[in-house]
Image (cartoon, rainbow, N blue to C red; front, side, top):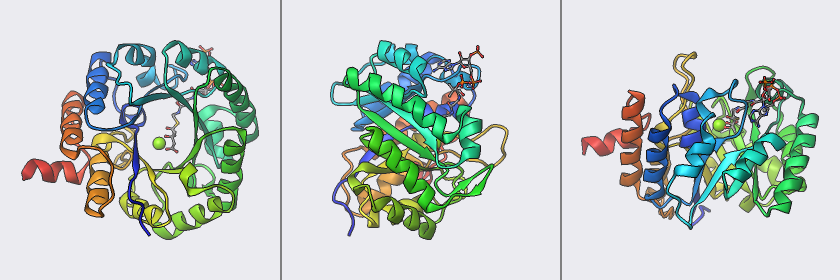
Length: 297
Ligand code: HMG
Ligand code: MG
């Protein structure tokens, strides 16, 4: 049974652009402003993380302050700790996201602490977010495989997902960070998560490195998941890892959903146009078959 409607959580300006060469702030602002005109309701606009670690996100305050905000769109940012939360608050984000890992190796490399320690840091962020009435999303990375520890057990994913929901996240977004997942494995993870968490509180966040993201999304849809993270033009990918690609492209997800009769509220042509514009600044072609096909039409 497929859902009637899905909600697209656009991460191109954050997950996409954090993995591309740094571009001028004005180009990011133009990109987000274009995305705001497409019908999207959730746009991740930046990350308040160490500028030494991720220089591409160092201008997140400026971006959030200068974009042309629409009142019916939630603009969000990553906040790994209190320092990040304070900056996000100043920039008047509509919601924040904490981001943990289901595997220890990635937790250490990405956020410089163990899973247990990360949950303590997130608790502190959560307490402040509650004071300020800011909704908190929880990302969970490496739900299938970890680049350092190998395969992750679905029960382990479920355990950390429960922690994120128990501490107050309104939703947990399941990250196939290195895009190695395939539908049967994704089904096992969603099944394990479903023992304690309602489908309405689960999102999927699939990277397309191995070309499986759309198949995995279809699997998730058949299991009642109705929030999908995606990145316009499939932005992302690591300049140091040949062949690595970004998140599943928003255009491709929209085409799949619309053809399945699932409502998204998002205009596919407008997203494709925003994708071509940002790709021009990045000197690349969109990583989206749908975007290329639309152009050829
Ligand atoms: P830390 O534990 O303090 O240690 O930070 P650190 O050595 O990694 O960083 C320390 C430096 O960062 C210090 O500065 C801090 O002041 C500074 P220094 O003394 O060296 O000059 N710092 C900050 N600066 C600005 N804003 C802050 C902040 N916090 C500390 N909020 C921390 C821990 C997590 C902050 C750090 O390790 C970090 O920024 N890591 C990068 C994490 C990141 O952005 N990763 C990419 C996003 S996650 C992702 O892409 C996965 C996802 O898409 C889902 C999926 O696909 O699986 C969400
Ligand atoms: Mg990601």
